[in-house]
Length: 158
Image 1 (cartoon, rainbow, N blue to C red):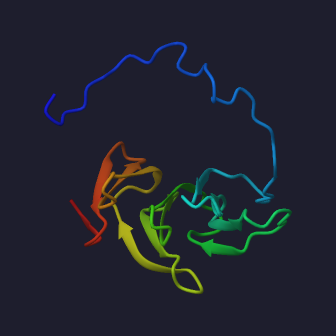
Image 2: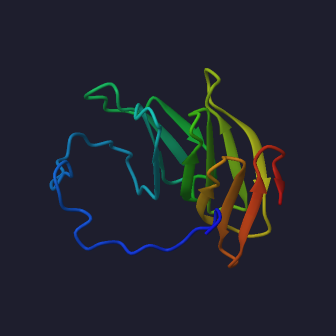
């Protein structure tokens, strides 16, 4: 038990009770324009990032009625899909993976977002990403059956 994770049962009535919403309603539609394979939202809930064919679109959802993205990050060739995108909690770094052997790390703190690093694996594609709780390590789930572990600070394999 000393700092180790322990499984716990999930009670069947865990989603029932006061203060737990029972219904959801649509409040807006973001018209990405084609298949969307990945989505992430900033902790401030101001920006949403949607990944599709070749790019990630950035939406400012604090502006009601906004019909178009505020930016488009061209990450891959137009025929390749973004499969995962993860935003670090500081809201300044976005990691993008998809149908390519590279992950791109985007600096969102600049006036025009730019790629600040690319991580290349031997796999032809990355289908999912996870970030460690301390935001120092990225796990990329690859099409070759491996999970590649990256040191985000040094941009190297662990």
